[in-house]
Length: 585
Image (cartoon, rainbow, N blue to C red; front, top):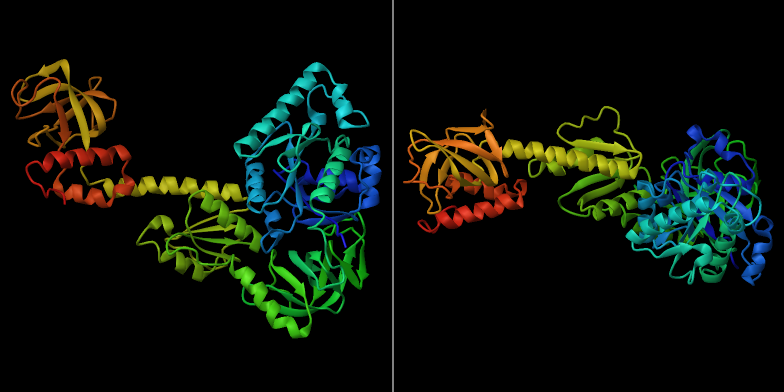
């Protein structure tokens, strides 16, 4: 049989994900959300009759009778929760709606959403929401394309510009896209549908594109055995009055019955229990809505969102797989589910940061996004940061303090746990977590660099400027142009033959005494024990004479040096090795 396609809504905060669904559900779910931002994952079943009623005459253009039984909407607070919608081999969602505020364009979470969708190979449609907020827009009932044609020329121009900006953002991510009515091939281009969640304009077109895409290109994937054993994913673990701990789950295959034996994947081993109660939200209601009516049912078939009550599920985490089975198959199913979890919770490298997350899916997404940023992950696991995590991270400190780091998404540090030398970075938004870590890393690297290099002589190279000899000797004072590196008072200078000539006793810039001069600066330096015209001449190139012991130390600390400094050290080594072939080796 064909099941309902699972449709996930993603997008930057306040882009209108829930409002779009509210228009379809005719509910006011968003009014009961804290700060008008979706705080938990939700699921809503949209019957095919609702889809037909909203689409109206548009469906006639499809030239195909709808055979899907409806749509199952999954609402998420941004893209992080979408990662909990996982099953082995990719996303639980069959298709996604990426909601973009047409006036704001792509935001950081939008970009991350696209990366996650691409990584999980989830097809998606872009919905450009809030067209009603474009200056001069006149709302009207009917097709959004018909309404577009009735707008003033300047409004049409703004719409086109905004759509092209979205096209450009997708193109930068190597995705070909086009406005839905101009698409040539839905299998090669991503459709962009302009809509307004406030007025409902474009929502019929959005549903038509969704229904058409899923039915035409995904019918095979929607085939399921509605009477077989259930396969699903845990979305959330909640305390419900009168039921204790409950699980909000999405079933994507088979059916679940009251009294069924179920196996739930776990961090410390699979959990085996029996279904005490199945609570199903009414059609067009929200699984997370406390005011929603729940019906105690005996059986639920895919695809569906349902609340499960069972014994011993207190330690279940979101994102883990759940299956029903016969008693004789329990051990086999346990092994399969644990293998799936172990693919995510692994020690990946000997050196690297430790990451912790609240759900299996978000851990998976965070690991991949960090690797995209070039961050090496040593260990990834679910749950709060424990004393053991701190000990594990601290073991990296002596080798590299930048690796003695724990990154935590949507979790806390266990009470009483001291972090010591370990840097702990936490955030409830993935892109902010990564940005915070990179900012700390950059700052700490500079601090370490300054500490390690503080007492060493760094390379530099200067040219004696022609016409800027202020004194020939006792001491010689000459104008120089710093070609590379940083010149400091007290450093010795040598010529191209490697002969040490003098020591810089002072530096002046614009008649002010300074301690150092960077590349590109023109300053005057004083050199005792040399005479201009004898040991040095105008136009000469002089180098800072890096002592051999400092050269050897700098080779070990080259990760703190710029590419230019490294090249300059090589140049100095070549000069020194003309007289001593093993200098600095």
